[in-house]
Length: 475
Length: 116
Image 1: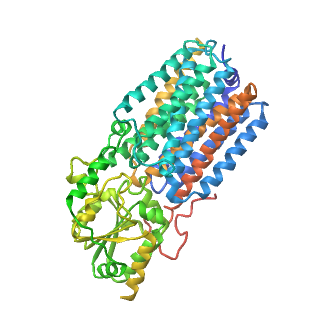
Image 2: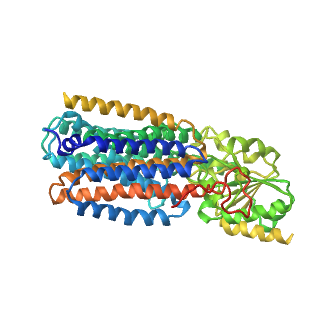
């Protein structure tokens, strides 16, 4: 027998199909817009219009059934989603995206579960392809839901950002969980009549989501979120095939494909391979080694004052500002902009060096600096910025750590070895604004701080920058 | 027969959509990675439709209704929150076009943002 959803859809499909075609054309057009800087705002809105059309088309065909429940669900979702999206700080964007991705995955596995119960807790009466795609959606949706929530917890620092794992047994644990989930899935596809097995499958997939993401270090989180985003897309496409819904298939698959590409682009920017990220343990053993390495340096750290930093900057002719997560946390972007204006008034040439993964997400710094009206042409991407450091008098590092760590170039044993960095150490002198000597998000000590030409200015990024600006005004 | 052709048609759509996804996102500047991730994230909230369809046609018992209402709420959060957050991120880029933004002129040449 055909599921009632499928049946009725086939009966009155032409008009609604046209609406769906319009909707997914708008998604594609919107995504094209999103991949270019001048068209991005419009692209996002075009995609949103597509979504509205898809929802309306769907409501048209749901007929008379259960309007109250639909309104309740949509109202609940709006009441939670709108304020969350409106009020979230720009610094917390990455975890917000993780959370939104997670609920998407949650919707996928809940739908698969409800569908299974609708069939009478067995797939024996439905075509086997429906069973296969439903089971796929349930497993992947559950993994994505739990994985995204862990990623959210790590970025929000509810869960420690450092890798948590079973050590060398991790791979085996993951593999066993995967096999268990697949075994339950196959049992269901071949006609097992048991809701307990379905729930068991969801639980094992939930454990798998936890087990995969917990061992991954915080620095890799953006890539993980992007990967889970692609997963949710694929599971939505599978739901589409199970329900015979074109809009779901196209939108889900486009996200699955573009999400995979995006994940790969991000991983490349960090010189990490996706398998090695998923295999986990970034910084697991390396934390300790790195710390010992720096200790063995026997190097000393030189600290400086805002007044000294101001003098150093005032008499420079070229200054490069290197922003990082510390600037984001302290909301220091406006203070940084003020400092830049003050320096420019003194004929100092200022530009900003932006590492592709500075902050906790690619593009994070650009968003914040754009908010503070920093002219776009002052922002230099890594490849343009690196040759400039040799001609730079003072590099002002504001809350950036791992992306400036020379260990990525010099220390093959370092967990971040091979990651492209901003070559801050090439400039004539370096001022680092940092709250303390604690290692960064990746948990690795930074040799740069022990470099004789580096001076540390300890303090909150915003107040430190404001102090420098105030001192500058008095010179 | 009919079922088989539905499946193959849908598989064809699936494969073609995959290629479109690859092509559309082939080259994106680093700056736009985060908004793009967030935008695609909003789009997979389309799974909301699945919840609407099932609840609209059957709904089943009370427990099923509870599951589906949660699913619809989750899907709505994904869609609404996703698009809004993306829009907020992109707002930040608005004053930035190459056209020599004069410090005083708030919304000069490219005022085609539309309502919101």
